[in-house]
Structures are given as structure tokens and as C-alpha cells.
Image (tube, rainbow, N blue to C red; front, side, top):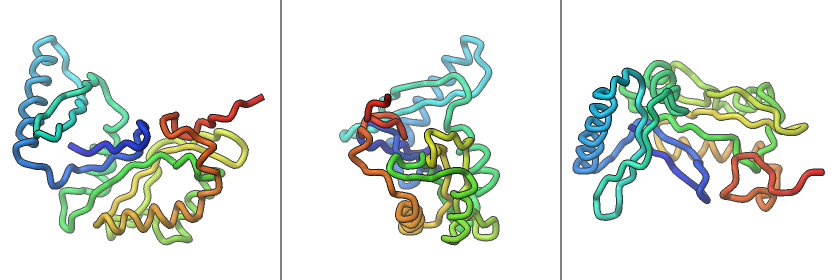
Length: 192
């Protein structure tokens, strides 16, 4: 289980594993997830199942979506959180996945890796912390690329410090160039 966080109706980032969940809500998620899995199994499905749910302010859990396929989050849970970072091991680590922010001008993969090296925030297996590029780098215009990256961290302050350092390094695009509810990295200005 993890947390999806939205800004302006756009997925901003997701964090695994889910920590600090109310036990009543956890039980509802597990019970509801089990019921969904059983329903799919009864129909003959034998694959991955990814369910999204929200907890209302009154403590009620509502499932909003089920993907009977390998979803966009599976690599975070299985490959990165469990096998690379091992979030279950001590000391405790979490993994957050971000899209390159629309205000960032990251020219390419090499420039991003060079920045993580210079800033000292590349992934370090000894500490199980740092940045891991988790999806292919896609050029969107000259001097700008879009991709997804993970950050393994110990505390929220550590996570924010790395984000702030990367933001300071790459934030060169005016925020009013992009609609908050639009897709990541898609300009709202018309193109000729």
C-alpha cells in the first residue's frame, strides 16, 4: 500500500510504503481489497490487481478504481521499494516517485545524473537513500525532457531537502506556462 498525492487534479507524487495509517482504515482497505481480488479470481483472472481507494473524513473507505493489469505503480512497489531499497529493512526507508516538474528544464538523462552526483543525492546502496530514475527519459522540446524518478529517503525533511536542491537546480520554466490540471510537461501555450 502507498499514498497518491495530487496537486491541481494532477498526480504529483506517490509514496510507498504507506506509514501511519489508522488501523480501522487499514482493515477496511485489506478487507475490501480481498473482496475485490476474490471477485476477479472467481471470474478466472490470475494476474496483478491494482486498486485505488480513498478514506473519507468520517473514516469510510471507498474504492475508486481497479486495474486488472500491471499498473504504473508496480515497478515502485516491487522492483524499487522491495528489491532495491528494501523498505521493510531497518533503518526505515520510504520511496517517493515524482514526475519531472513542469517548471524544470532538465535537458536530458546525462544532465540529470550529473546534477544528482554534484548535489550528492544519487542513489547510495550503503545508505539505501537517493535518486533512482524509474522511467525512460522522453525529450519534449529542445533543452527539456520528461521522465519519472524515485527518491529513497529516511525522513520527510530528507525528502524535501533533495526535492528543493533539484528544484533549485532545474526550475527555469515559468509556472504560469502550465495549467495545474494539465498533463505534466504539456504547455498550455498554443504552438505554431
